[in-house]
Image (cartoon, rainbow, N blue to C red; front, side):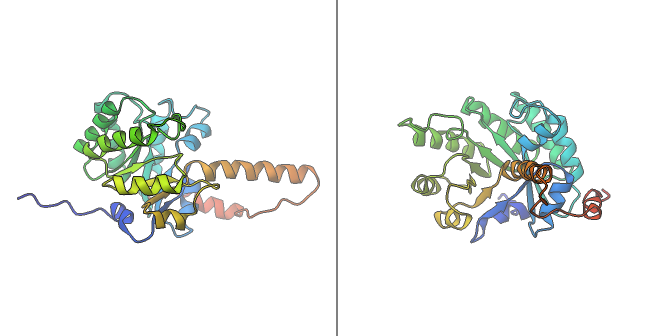
Length: 264
């Protein structure tokens, strides 16, 4: 008789009464700052990582940068989940190797997006990750609502077909960014067997409302990174106009402290 694998601390966060609110960082300082607000788990944002080094997001160009960030963050006190785009390769074996390296440096989760590519290939990537890093929480993302035609009459069915394939491949959770309709979210919650992750939208349901619908994880994606850029521009605009900039800003010494990595 096979002994069930104990649920990891990160997986357990997806099975509480309230959903896991996962803020997404783009560098060491932002991750430590967010964790200091009381968050036990921090994700990364592929857009923030890519933009920070002058590379395009979603083009498999930032694998090394993503792994380096995971190395910088993996020894911190919080649980780390890494946004790995589509795994930075179309070869499931290479995706599995990347996931193995993430686990080796301390990551406990990986987010893998299908980019509306073949569902069977994405399922193979998920299976490859679980084969080499079984303890890594795989959040399988489908981009049907993010990149697809939201007017399609088969959108909900196509989404569920993909998610079912990913569940069967071993995904620990599924992610549908772009879906904000409460009825659609509630229907999807009833149809999947693993925790559902929804991307927070300022124009969509609140975190509490998503929890009431049955959503178990709420990601912020690139929102905090984009807000940080906006705040910088707003501050510059105020200064140029002769106004004192508004909003909070950590002190120089505070940021120096944020930049100190814990020894491995």
